[in-house]
Length: 353
Image 1 (tube, one colour):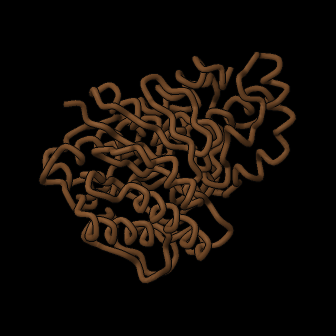
Image 2 (cartoon, rainbow, N blue to C red):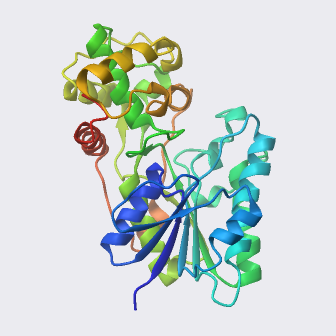
């Protein structure tokens, strides 16, 4: 019997990769977004999860076996992040409850579970790296915790199993996404090449020199599917990264080489991309018009504020994957290949020249 999935946030980096994998594995896939995009094999569902009644109406006839929640809305404060994003999860799960409600619900959060929200990012008493699931929550308000609590409450009420997945910075393709380091770096490299600007690492010495890891959206999608189909993974939280570690002092040169650039020397000074790219919108529009690119709006491709938050951290960030590996999830993805695959995909889609 064909299994049915509802991917929430299907137009985003994680949601689109998850929908693609599920289609490839023979699932019937419904993709929910405020403004659904065309995706092969995915049945679009338009809904704004902030509107409980509209969500109820949009999902009235849908009975998915599994739900994959891959979306959130950034607000101006953590209090607002909690209010809005918890309500979105609550409205979704309330709309799906019933005798034929979902069998499994997966929630994607991230390493801010260990690092704290943007307002207190990497500050205060943090757990020791590598981060492990057993380290639990920080004593600080965090919308990830509020989202989890909504899932836990609905699972206790409605009887479905759940899984929580915590990626590090995600590499993948999406336009208009608020957290998109891979495309941001591709756009930054293109601008540097166009303007003869030094391709300079924008972050901290700690990030330049320390070990770190990342998460390919395809790797995260594999774990989401694995957890939905593995009974032992029920009601568990999982870290999810590619499986390798690297230093930006090495990776920066790899990215520069792909774009035909020489990496600029790094002297330890933080020079944020948000500052470097502040006046580049007109330049990007000119490049897009000249080269026939699909997206002339720089703000819909690059999210320098988020890349700055990751690359500017003053601490090492490394993630332990032992828990899911012990349970049988053995997928692996080299991070430099993840970047290169993305760059090729962006070029093929006419999003970079």
